[in-house]
Structures are given as C-alpha cells and as structure tokens.
Amino acid sequence: MEAKPRIAVYPGTFDPVTRGHEALVKRALPMFDEIWLAIGYNAKKQTMFSLEQRVKWLELVFQNEPKVKVDYFDGLTIQYCKKREATFILRGLRSSTDFEFERNIAQANQAMEPGIETVFLVSDPGLSAINSSIVRDIFRHGGDTRPFLPDGIVLEQAMDKQKKR
Image (cartoon, rainbow, N blue to C red; front, side, top):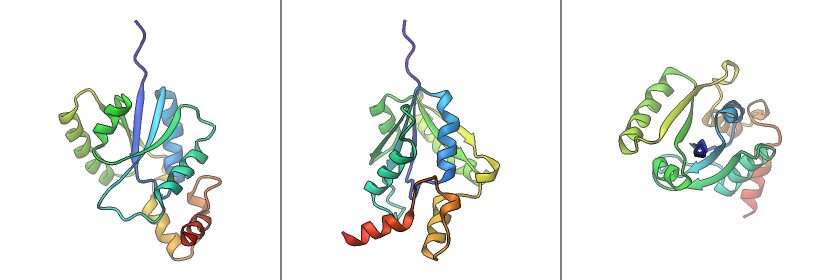
C-alpha cells in the first residue's frame, strides 16, 4: 500500500512575507511532501499589501522549491486543509505569547478535525523578533526593511504599483 503524502498548510497573512516565514518553510521542507502557503483572509487584520502582491512575493521567494505551493482562502484553516487533503498545519513560534495563542487554535482545530495535526517549529533565534507588523511599521516610518525581507522583496515597488491602480 502506498503511503499517504505528507501535506502541510502554513496559513498566514504574509503581509509582507519575512525572512522568518522563509526560514520556517525551508526548515519544514524535509518533513513534508508538499507545503501550501495559504494566505488567509482575517477580518480582524487590515492588510497593507494586496492579495495579488502577497501571492507574487511568496511565489518569488519559493520559486525554486517544487514542494511549495501558494494559494489563498477564506474561512476556517481546517476547512482549507480538508480541501487540500492536508493532514498537518504548520505554525511558527517566536515567543511564549505565540505558544499560548497558537495552542488554543490548535486545540480547537483538533476538536473539529482530529485527523489534522498542528506542527510547531520554534523560530531561529536571530529571527524571533521579526514579524510582519513590525516590518510594516518600519516601512510606514521610512525605515530600511531589507534586513527583514527575503531577497527580491521590495516594499516600495509594491506600494508604487498599488498607488497607480
């Protein structure tokens, strides 16, 4: 009997994608046959960058990783996992605060769908202070965001494109 593929969903807003996101996915690649980077719509979050831009960035960052797929969804992550036949949700932990928040979500997901496990990876020590909110704040105030972004991601260009629409 053929083994079932190990498919993970890494949900997030990726607004913008950071070096922390990139590092987490690269570390997870040996664990899974396929990783879906799923940009979720969160009514509580006001995004700075368009969905189209965020999809393009993720595709650029992982263009040489055939196991990484990019998509977007609306609704519960667990529903999206079922759509993709994923049996894992990938999440990163930067701090104990992240753990408390993510544990509650993982337990709710486990109650709704026992066949889907949440896998936590602790962030690289040098990247634990990086998150999209901080990067957006640095950008808003004219700071240099390059140290926090994967190669090829330039926020100024994205904003210029959005303003022209």
